[in-house]
Image 1: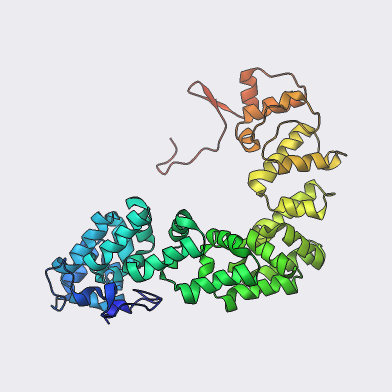
Image 2: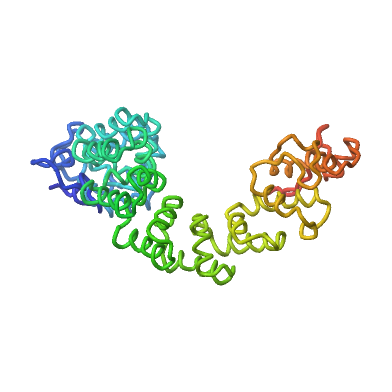
Length: 442
């Protein structure tokens, strides 16, 4: 077998090990290119190969040396007969362009060891025509994962696509979407890798085929995880140590598949301990909060959970634990802070001093848009608007605030100046910090 067929980890030609007798498509150079003038056995000096990779292929000196170090056989190929035609295929026929081809070769220099006629062109044609990616979509996938050009169409790519479409039930569109997001699935064995994980998620975890398909479509990298060393320990921790049971663990994983990519002791357990001890929810309260809002496990303690919970506690001290955990899943800077500021403008006082309106304020924080002032119920605010847009446009926000509080409307110029706007080319623009030019102040 040629060196190309065994060089990269995970299998270059067919990870299932089902190559036909005689080497099959992956034998590439050993069988002769058909598009090359050389026979593959001629010896060429390293300088010409180095200059080609560094200058014409655009890898640069460091990239060329790295590629030649990873694939020493490149020095044995004719530049004009083999390397240049394969590079031309990537640039023109595959549609990668000069920069895209350089990225693909840098990531996987083994691509220059495959025959255009036997390997590269059939794989590219399958991506463009049969999978329906189009030339641009196929070029993007090849740039990201160039190893796909080294896979056997008949013995590697086609069986994976057929399994995802029919047995897994994704259909053609779902299979293409999964392959686009995670091309590495084409290098996995169906019997030894993909099918056992699908079976574990659908049967042992109890998600069923449809929910398992949705989970894998959301996080296709789960197919690369080990069941024994990665997936099962997370399920065991959620079901047994956290006390959610098998059904609860399945619910958490289905709603937040990213949990499967986290370390138990270094990530999940730390967040459970934070909710139970620092927040004061207790072990059962933490379990209930995670079951109701699994995305809590995806949030950083220092950058998200702690500042958000502190902000909610300071502004709404009487809020229940359930509502507090729900608000913790929202963006602090993009949702909670702008809406609390608007509520403070509407209410005209500190929210903690207003009795009987905390539930109304919470509903304002949870809704997508605001239609009515929760303090006065004035019909002047029936027109819905995004709070984020209102804060960006200070003029509009002041209009709504004054309508809600029945304050007489200011003249337009005074209103704009009150918001800190400045007159620029006849139009009022919000006041923004002046950016310092790299050429000095102008």
